[in-house]
Length: 567
Ligand SMILES: Nc1nc2c(ncn2[C@@H]2O[C@H](COP(=O)(O)OP(=O)(O)OP(=O)(O)O)[C@@H](O)[C@H]2O)c(=O)[nH]1
Image (cartoon, rainbow, N blue to C red):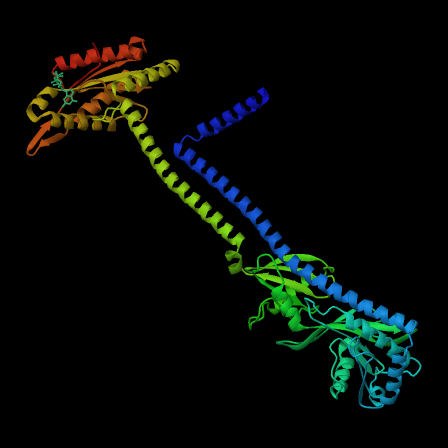
């Protein structure tokens, strides 16, 4: 406790020392206000930093919610897709032969050369298999109707058609699931009627990149691949597809895939619940082509220019799946998230206008306004206090001046003059220098007052003191010691030199005529008494002043307007 109070007092003393060094109170006031301004700005800035952190976290959470929701949905669908592949693999491994499958396979053998055909086990509980002719298959470079495996594959697909029929259709993200076989048939969750469209449908399935990309030479890892049938500026008919190959016993049978129409992704983003509902969420593919967005109609101008997209790409290319991040782009705040179950990017763009309208924007505005108000108040109080301090300072200076000077003649008054004269005499004594005193009195001053009035007398006093000051060196000092009596001390000056100075002043005063009233010129004169320290071997100022006064009296007696330096 003692140590703490000791430290505080040391600190207080240090502050006092600094303040005492800053002699001007104006400087102290300026310093105090700068300190308060600096502290308030620092606090506001700290609040702004905290607020910004909360804003960034809010934006990140907002996008995270959408990313997690989309990821969960995609994960569920991909799990289903892999389940369908496993079901096909089990069926290929252990085919089930029932009357119905045998009948369907027999139908296939009958219809296989027709341009299109359809097999269905149970109208209510399974989906139809739709197929094309042997001739069509023979013409496709990736197609192959292998006689040894075709029946087993068809049987397995018929089994799958039961399972696919059971799948839940009430999904947040509408999609289509299908199996496209290299053997010239397909099974889809959105089956076509048994008509000529089957051929064009199958044709479309097997020419798309999601089919060809699953050929062993194109996908040696046999992994899931995402592909897009994408056309910039057009969303109708565009698809985002996840596809897995179906391989068994060294043969590539076909592709199991699910595709999302871009509209369904669009709808998903529009209805996804994210906290602030402000900003635009966009889904990009791995080449940063926009696929879907949370706004109904995207602005005609792309949201990002090519260099901005390149900037985003440079940040996200090194990122792994599931990574999140943010960056600032002019006035926009961009948050991005790489999805776990899709090799694309989810981006949220939050503009400055949206930010200002949001909660954080409002708090920031209030904070800025408060800071500005405080700064304004601080400035106003600074102006007022500075004015007060200025007034006090000039009042103090006036009082100090009045305490030391005579207001009429602007020479030292008696008290201040005697104090200074004493110090000067002591200094000269210490340095064994000569020291002289001149006592001066205006001649017949009373008659000037009587003839011309008191104010004219004042004018004469002012005039005489001005001539007196002008005749002195810098080291000499003069003071008004009585009504029309003046005293001058001259350090480092002998009696002879002082007498010369007195004579010079006398001549100066007497040589000029003074206009006291219109047409009334007067010539004034003064008498002088001079004494010096060497002469009396005495440096006591009061005594020297008395000697000089005595000699002044002699000068008056001898007829005035003269200098007397002896008794
Ligand atoms: N106008 C004016 N008169 C002053 C002031 N102080 C003193 N006096 C007047 O100065 C006069 C001094 O008169 P005296 O002491 O009789 O001396 P004198 O008339 O100068 O005559 P001698 O000294 O003998 O030459 C008085 O009448 C004072 O009233 C002042 O500040 N202003």
